[in-house]
Length: 323
Ligand SMILES: [Zn+2]
Image (spheres, helix red, strand yellow):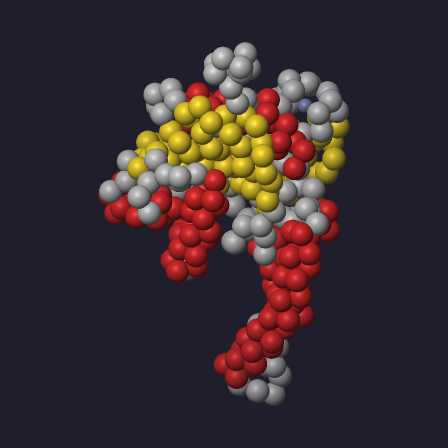
């Protein structure tokens, strides 16, 4: 475990906001979610060191991600590509934390020249071998890309996993062309769903998510790293509804356990009834929380943040001194 100062402002003055339990993968335990007293950034402190973090990314973590239906994942990636193409006209695109490369694959089909960075060798190998993509295994700062090389750099739900997000953002700035586009997507700690579910909010993903951004702290970090943030959106397929569906499913499984209907009926019949009842309860719950989340998105309270930023230049076209 390591104790750290604020990654955004360098302050070592923080207060504990919540104690949060380990979620889903890794040994059980608890962590402190703290807030910087000077800038308001929220982060885990103390936290597992990069070496200790391996315990919280077991093979089951990657298997779980890969188990999501391919068509559904395709549908998620199409939306990401649209977000890029609304603000950029093509060229060289780098995806940091590219996973198995599906987003890069689609971008390449649309004419982009693509490269990826991925820390997990098992999924990086898939991107190289199955899709023929150029993927570097490791962190962005280790990849040594040339300066002013890319038109677009993307971080899709990756920044919150990094031990030093500021360093990675500064590196993204270095390798972007002047005026190049940066897109960063992360969960929104200031959202309605984060407030409602508290320490059990799914997107805390404790302790894999080391940082928890609000619109203000994300914007501040991008500007500190030498970007101008020109837009923040609040919706991403595959992220907003997870925060609602998981507690909804847990509730339904408590109301309608597997054994429901077993009394006086064959077990298989009982399980069939229980399954039907669960769907019958889940669908209205899903669609009503979907409506709530759409209202949240409209009011800037959605569970996802998509920040769009451009590389800042000073009057002479040089990098600001934050570099
Ligand atoms: Zn701070």
